[in-house]
Length: 556
View 1 (cartoon, rainbow, N blue to C red):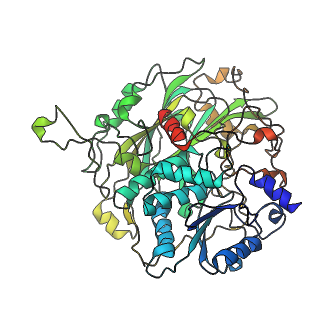
View 2: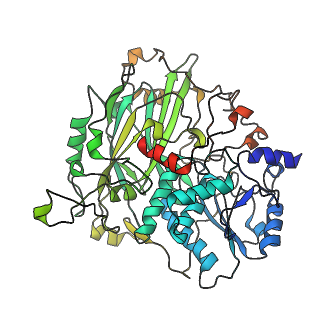
View 3: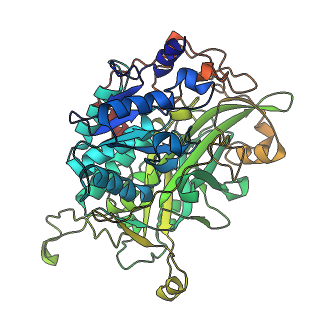
């Protein structure tokens, strides 16, 4: 019975034929193993890899030459002692990319274990999160790219071939995680240098805004273990526009920048990221966006009344749409978000001529700026279809917006102020040298029920009915392009494609056309009583990795 449950839980992921466990060897030389998170407690051990079974297999195949890297912000699932304390913890929340500041230490610690000065021949790295897919895949492919010289496309294709059953979609399917793998590729090609800065969100521009949409800015805290909502825009911070937001955008971009190495944003031209066929952000394309013809859609400018300061360069824009229902309830019909890193987006935001001044009018060449002195401001843009969906899938419910752009700037800190504050940003982070002492961030608390934001609960995203409160009513109405008197009007598409949920968020029935592979949403939740599953829930996407990357880039 337990074996059958484990096969059901593994779902689209390939199981190792010899071990009978939910794991795979990512590389032919057996250096990297990806596995779902093992468990030592009931009832999880009935349908996940039992910790002792995984340890027994690793001992049999690799002796004492294996070590674990785990990434579960929801809790490891077992004590370190059960894996001989050969484990490193770099946790971050499920369905999200990692805080980029973790990447240099993760890559360096894996490198030293496999091929460092004291490394023994035959060592292997075991990576796991919950399902051993999105978070584990991001790190496994990042290692192949940064330490083994693989291309982005080859690394992601290899992980899909080894981790997924044929015809069941990509190993890494969340757009923001794919974007992060592209960041790693750039980082590896430019001296393994990253600059962590505090980021201020100056404005958010939205095209095709529907009624009842909430826009919030989020970021990482507690070394990436927690996602915190730093600001949710209210109606007083919104300005509706009759046409494209060109004038407002240009006025905001005229603000003087704070770095000698910056260029006025209205002059910036974005170079494609390595994984893109077209840019995802540019100040020139912002003014060319047309408003949707959908009834009630509008263009809007959100400008905060108080500064929005994020502690790192990792920025998340969260979108939620609510429609008023009866009896004090609201229907959540849209959930989407997008992560970007201001450091990497800024590195591709400028083109500078390398030719003499007299030749600049005839030909120019893109020049990558000094990674240690990045531009101090920029604009990130994305289309609705390219944003991350619900719980790691592409499902977002009904359309809430057409496109958004985020105007950001790095927070300037004077040398005198930085000298009086130990560890004050900006901070240049380089990859540790071989043999250096590398620390992890420590395990997250076990059984952490508030997976996304313990500092600002409740922050669990899901579609369906919720209780309406005066605060949520004001926030959701803040983005409405119609007056308050007309907000009770039911949108023509308000419930189209929305799943039916029970009071605990479980699904009564799956959407017949939903074939997306969730990052780490498992059939295991049937056992935990959270979500019903059926054959229709199984993903059937056969899109190739390069094709998926191209599709995402073309959508923004």
